[in-house]
Length: 149
Image 1: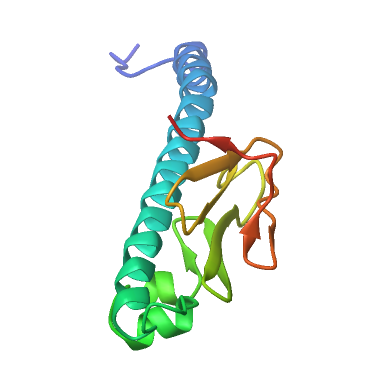
Image 2: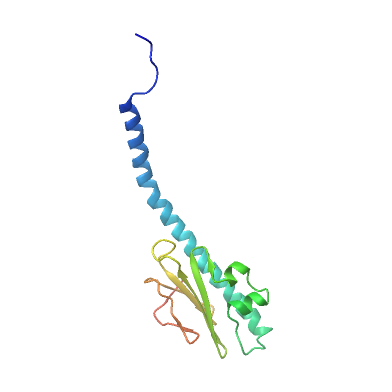
């Protein structure tokens, strides 16, 4: 007989099964890490919107008006990605009223790109909503939000 070298079918199947088990353990952790990173990015983006709105209020807004995302983008206070309303798996919006505003970030795909949603108003306190619904009604965030620690 010839001297045959290589792996048998059983050995290859064992290696494939081991790789599948490792992937089954690693993939959920990877997805959870991505959601956490998206949520951290959403919080940071809302802090940026707040800082931009404080600047807008004191300059362009003449101490009476806040700006929505388009106005903040037009004045060069936020980047085009955030000004477009979507960044890192979250959709952003800003409602303004007479000397009030509320900006919110909601996961684009609830449960996949993020679980919690976030909001900030003129007080600068970023709050989260565990159910994923950051409602900004008439420029004021809802009372059910929990402040970010």
